Image (cartoon, rainbow, N blue to C red; front, top):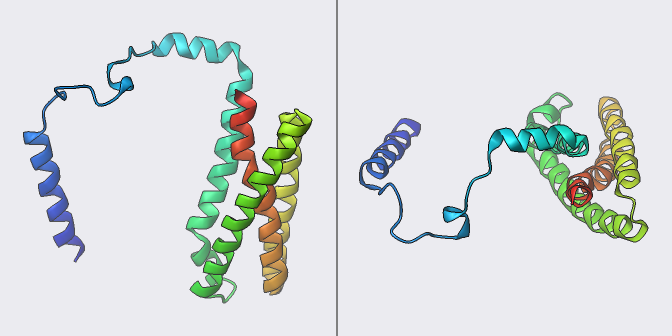
Length: 168
């Protein structure tokens, strides 16, 4: 099945390469005709503004960690004797609590106008809760682990949106 599917995709891509025009007759949006910024100049600006580099690092580590956990969750739970049904429960809890946390901590961050403190609080508490998840999984406490997962993502996911607000 996969080789048949891959063959179709390669054929379509080759047709696109051969028959697609280099540029559209009319620009599709503003960014298609906008002047590009010089990469070296942009890097020099980033060197002077270390805050942005720290925000990108925090964003990447936090969001990357959450995505890696979600993408490999089924495999990780097999070690503890849990099936795909429980992995789906974890993903649902992660998404719902992450959404709730983004709303709550977004409001708190705007209210107290100190995103840095809120981001640091969220980062520290999410790490504590996620360590608790793996400790309780190891002991077989599924419900406690599920609650700690919800609390971890309640505090972890808002870091992504708060970092973007903090950068602006």
